[in-house]
Length: 387
Image (cartoon, rainbow, N blue to C red; front, side, top):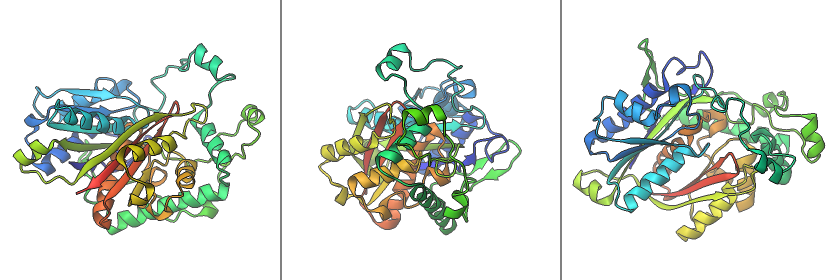
């Protein structure tokens, strides 16, 4: 396998990548992957792409359109999948399963989200996305992800200072990784319509401190919710949440047979997969049971792992996960995470895998685990073994 990603651009008008159509953003990222591996694109059996907001510019099977936009052979098909924030991690799972069953020998798995051009939630059209039966089952109703992040913080007794300290760490580590060149191998430079080349993450805020973050107001405070959940301390802010960004990622997966035939040197293999559901009210806790499940299936323990990528949807999520497993904090998102690098929804799963692979190679570690919390109370988990 090999893995690349685009730089991360702020997901708002004027952001570094906001002038580029989502299809072209993904097309350039996939083209960079194909170019770097040297593989004949006609050998690809399928393109599996994660995308959450499949509306507007992202509604036309964005993986298929990106493949065609890159000028690649028309006979190669594509499918776009959606498992909320875990969409491109699910694309990885599907691609690997296809190889394991013999359906594929060569597959591109990818993800994209242009949040500046296709705003989060725009595919809902103000609809009741839960339906009356779900609302009745969880009466008086489910809550937003921000409120769920507050519930996680309350359950694991995480203070505002802990959340802000973790968030400042994310920016510090991501900035150090960028400045040292650690991200250079994974980033595909993106060319904008005016010829500008973007080759660095725009989202990292160097110099972020706990003191600066402490000045931000709670983002989800609501008197009605406070009455329902008096345990909430209202500690979740824009500063200790993931950033809205534009980005894409792409990974080449090949069977052992195809790797030998095409003279490719694999960088890693998969050692385990799991997907799991949990309480849809707290919503963001499923990485815990998903991690238990993937460890059981792989025969590994937390102590066997050299690296953990737990998506920083909110600071409370990786901190709760770390507490639950008594995991080594130095191995947790050691190059920063979505708080600093952003969370381009459909692209994040493959972005995490890309970053984790590079970090394992730099550290000499063998096993890395990544897990993604997902709306509705779900999570994917995956273990990668560096070769």
